[in-house]
Image (cartoon, rainbow, N blue to C red; front, side):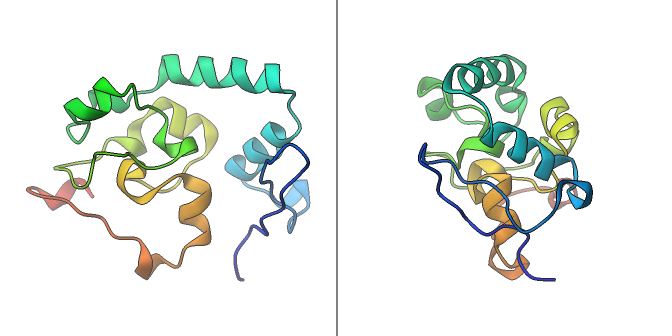
Length: 135
């Protein structure tokens, strides 16, 4: 099966999945579908709640520059402006990632879950240093 998402830009500039019926969506697909139906206020409230629970600052890859820029939730909102490689990734054990059904890792480097799912695996580069057993 090809990509599970066809990017569709709504009048509110949101991208949401359209290829699968809700019964055939995994947990992340349902999360994206639910988010696409939120009002701006609901979206801001969810973003605030997820940012408060975000575990990125505990990751060994999280850099001082990311902390200074208050970068969080790479899994939803995109890669870091300053992190280019890292020693390890705690994304798979993050409570937000587990709750929302995320399957990838190194979001700070490779971009958010939705982008990684659309990308062929051979194009996802994990730039690490040190112990690769954490990958």
